[in-house]
Image (tube, rainbow, N blue to C red; front, side, top):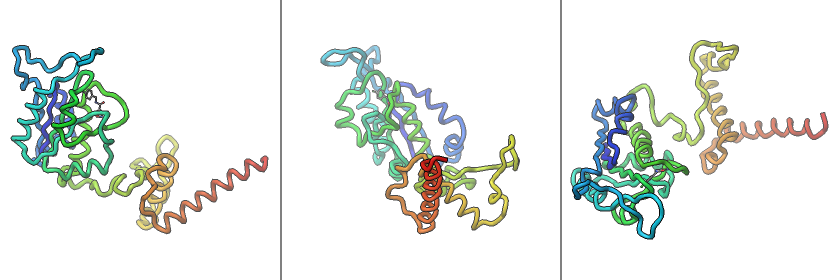
Length: 254
Ligand code: 4FM
């Protein structure tokens, strides 16, 4: 997968490209990330990329021409790529969106700066707008890096053999179960006995129930429309019964 990133701060991407899974994925040619400086497409003597907003107001708006030229350049290099603007106005990124983007034949990620992007860019020059969450950043770069990171690890080969993206949280639709490693006892807290038992059936069941339990408590929204087994339902009924018993003990005044 090739990622072209249009940005006024290409140097920011060295943080993403210089370490960890993404660095290795680039070295092994599973992905390619090319930051492209939008300022290079500014035509005037001062390489101007921003201007005052029509209608007045504080702050500056990104001029459309250099962004348009940058997108045209990236599209010529990657004719089949999907062009995405990072903005809080976009549809929210989640694992499903990341999977969809991982299926694209290349991505062109457009990062804005200042108080906004000229609306004609968002309206006519990009295929999609994506937000990484309901908060405001000072530019699209960190959001683009989040998208690259989340998508890169879904490209076959990038994670190596030590891990499968199919097995992690969100592929099951539930939160991840707790993980432990040595030592068996740490600051007085022991690893759950079942994980030391060697009983792989019991371990599988314990992990599934731990995932279900923490998903109900922390992110009940994730459980809606999730395929649940009869075993899952039985376990949740037991949890419900346990909760009722505890509440009952309180309301009877003990
Ligand atoms: C975006 C600043 C465009 C200026 C931003 C311009 C964001 C987010 C975000 C800031 N991007 N998810 N949240 N961008 O805050 O994606 Cl012109």
